[in-house]
Length: 188
Image 1 (tube, rainbow, N blue to C red):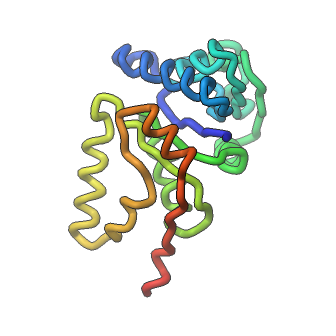
Image 2 (image 1 turned 90 degrees about the vertical axis):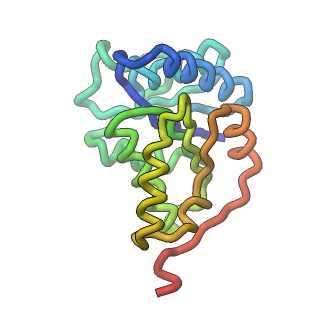
């Protein structure tokens, strides 16, 4: 299985996030899965890739040319270069069988909401998981609950992804995923 991991490229975060990233990367390799990621060598992104490679796992990095330098790019992997961030995301989506969001910043949030929106619109039926290390996504989940409570979206949205603090549970979910999808416009 090709697992796309979206996550932080920041180095100014608590080391527990980096440790979780490396551990998850090792678990991907031990599961004989392939990591698809944004090709950065820093932060959780680099930690996941290093963990995967340390266990002999296959890693595919997708990176725009404007990041193409030895200072930010993880080079111990297959590299696919793109012209734009949009092209990068499209290639990552197309090559992946599943998506996992580890803690990250605005780019990770954007990637999560885009892939979730596409699933809600029935553009894909691939599994999505939020790896909620240290309760990082608790406030985001509260925001989603508020949107549901106030009628901005359906409770069904919560069935489109798993939230877990355990990498084994996430990998098991991805492996045994039974597609659930709904098109929000079917009921209009």
